[in-house]
Image 1 (spheres, rainbow, N blue to C red):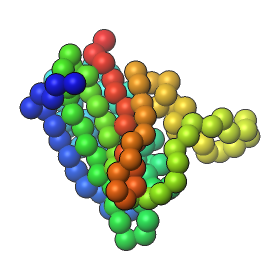
Image 2: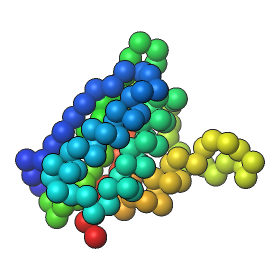
Image 3: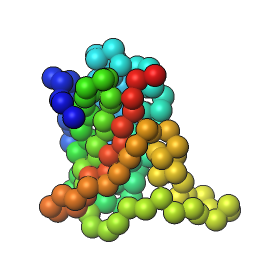
Image 4: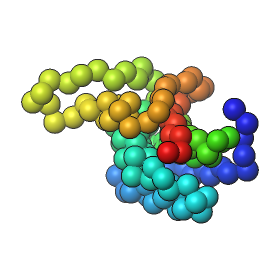
Length: 131
């Protein structure tokens, strides 16, 4: 996919205030690019992916990187890079569970999503086409 000159990247530490900071950063970038058609969906997915990174992918003393790009045909790509191990799956939690639905939301809202390797860690990404 051809990359346009629309890319932003930020690094966040392993603390709860990083989640709203990542959402604000994403909102700023999408407003700057005039790509707000799916803003609410993108922001919810950023919240879910960054929360998962903090809970499962970022070892103590480390952080995560958020990369946002607008590619050809106004496709917005969100990537969360962490340095933790483990696999990422969207398994269905029991109905009474209080957690475990984040990747189901990402799968439902994004046009596509996936996981890539990184050394160390992984990249969890999702994409949103313009509507």
